[in-house]
Every structure is written in C-alpha cells, then in structure tokens.
Image (cartoon, rainbow, N blue to C red; front, side):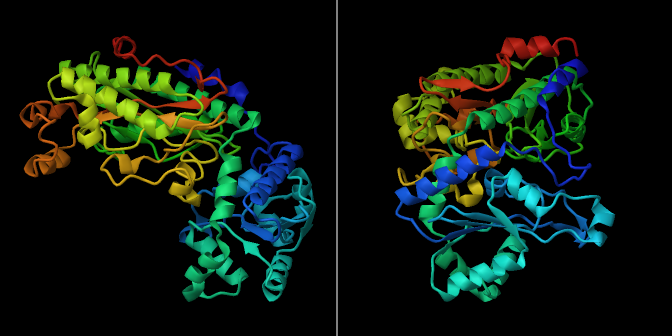
Length: 497
C-alpha cells in the first residue's frame, strides 16, 4: 500500500525559502515572460492595445480572529503570471509597452521574527520575469494617476470579499461603489483573452497536472485496497488527507468520501460503511505549484457489487469508455456530454428503467433524472480551472450560450476542444429520492421513464467515474498511470478485504 505512494515521491520538487510556508514551486522566469507576452497578444487581438492591467495577490482569511487564519491559497491568475505564494502583493502590466511591476513592502524586523528570513521583492520580481519592483504605495499612486488621466484600467472580477475591499480602497471607491467598480474596470474582453491563454496548457503545466493525477491515482488505489467495513466516511477522508500531506501536497478540493453517492457533494460523516454499501471517493491533490488532479472511483465496500449496483455500474463504465473514445480536437464538449447521455439512456433502456427511442429521450432530457450534472470541467491551477473568472466565460466563451434544460444547464464546459486543453470526464448515474418523487408526481418525461421499475432500483444510490484528459493534435490522452476501473478489476481489488 505505502509503496504505491512512495513510488511517486520523486515527482515532487518543492522549492523552499528557509521553510517559509508561503513559498511555492515556481517555473523559470522565461515561462512567466512568455505568458505575459501571450496575454498581450490576446488582448491586442480583442482590440485592447493600451491601458494598465492590475492584479492583486490574495490576502489571508481569518478563521476566527485576525492572527488565526485558514491555510493560505494564492489567487490562481496571480500564480499564472507571477508565481509567488506571498499574500498582499500587487502587479501591474502596461499593455502598450509590456512593462511590468511587482508591488510589495519589504518585511520589517517584526515580520521576520514571526516568519523567518523572506526574499526581497526585487528577488521575487526577477524570478517571475517582472521588470521592476516598488513599495505597495506606488500601486496606489499608479492607479490614482491613471484615473486622473482617464487612461484605461483593467481588473479581474473578485471572488473574495477581502480582495473586493482592497480593490475598492485602491480605486478610492467605497463599499457602495463596488458594483460600479466592476462595471467600470472589468472588461469581458480581458477575461476572454485570459481564458484563451490559460486554457491551452504548456508542457510544464501538463507535467504538473500529471504529477497531481499520478499521486491522486495512487491515493485512490490505496483506499480501494485498504477500506474495510466499519470505516467511517470521515476516516476515509482523513486517510486521503494524510496521504496527500505525506507527499507535500494539499487537497485540490474538499474530499467527497461517502456511501451516499446519490448526494452529489456529500460531506463525509460518521456513518460506518457496511459490506452491503457502495463507496464513492471523489478526491484530488494540489501540487505545491498549484496544479490540481481530480479523480472519482466507485467500488463495493464488500467483496462484490450487488446485482443491481453491478448492472448500473456496467452501464456507467460503458458510457465512460464511449465518451473517452469520442474526445478529439475540434469537437464541442457539449456534444461529448450528449454522447455520454445517450450511452446512459441506451443502457438504462436495456435494463428496463427507461423506454422509447434513446435519442428522443435524451433530446427531451429524460436521462437527466439519473445524470443531472455536466460531464466535466477544465482542470489546471484550479480543480475547476479559471471558474473564478466566470463559469460561462470559461466553459462557453463567445461560442455558445448555456442551455436552460435540467441537467444540461449544469454543464460547466461546452465549447470546442483544442489541443492543450485539460479537462475531466465524469459521467454518473444516480437515484435521488426527492428528484424521482418530484418528477413522478409531475409526470415529467413519463413516456420515457418507467417509474414503477425505477422505484425498485433506488437502493443503488449513486456512482460516478472520473478521470482527467489532455486534448492532443490527433485525439486525447488520459493523464496519469493506467487505472483499471472495470467492475471485475474493482471486485478483484476488494476480494481480499
């Protein structure tokens, strides 16, 4: 068990600066310079040739009093352009000249007493390919000067209240003016330009994501071989956390470790698994560089899946395999989602839970009773990559508009796939009591759904398969080592428990 984890220890190359917890692994300065240049080109292609782009690092988030904070996580756009893990810094990019500046106050002796020696802002700026550094007060002066001259200023949307507060202060706007601030300085062209450059992953990014996936896969396999009846869901989640920590990684999101797979984001509880249960683990690690992995494995707690559970799992696995074979550049992900939906509908018709023409059933949205979420999402510096910029910008762009059909409206990624894009594929089949009751009472899709039969399968609960893929010039490549998730392989792994 432990050997599978240790086998990947050589993948981790964590940079430390005298043990300071804010520092993360950075790439070469040339990579950050190329990213800046690509962003400027993307802005120019959208008609933005002058102005100043302002970016703020995240601040600490107090947990229950100012000096007791949640673990710090840097803003992902900041990591993309600057790479440093330190809070409360600023960054400016002059779009016309390409000149960049890092804004940070040098640590005082009082700071050093608590944190140890810290790198200078000049040193950090050099590592990130930034032209020069200045005290943070200089950013206030820069913004004031640009506002006075009515020169264009651009920011990204805020997803944290403390960052919105800092931007409001920086732009001399009070709380009541925050909406005006967003309307004035958040330009959709800037967001789309940034999405366009970030969604095509460079070789160094794909390597980091693949490291995250490899470690994640090892953790999933270890739990597959280790979980025993009597383990609580919380114990399984703690197991995942301990394995991630042992590899110097964080979790890329809160672990879903549950016997209640029909609750899509069920938080782990004190429920003790029994040999009759099916267990769903949706978990991933985040590398010290910030790049994420995201896998889901569903397996029996006992040595074998129940008869109904196995039948549903085989439909799900077939849908997963069919979907993966359809991945290719130039294909819209919404069409891949419909491929998965059709495979699920065909499988459920064969089991007698649905009826009629499967294409018509999918068109009507009948399959969404069992598959109410989207097929996948982009992965990178966030497990749901770039969604802090706006899910529709990231997943739909200017190409498509989100559907209002139940199930399809939850699709996070819909647009055309391109070489270099990294995303998950995660079909699921769920028997959600409240949803079935509502649809049955309202006779929704009654021509396609056999509610009397469905009621007899409710104990199956829910299951999902998820793996991460990179689109290539000729098709798609599954990231990470092979992981056999066929029912036979899962049952073989569980047979010795």
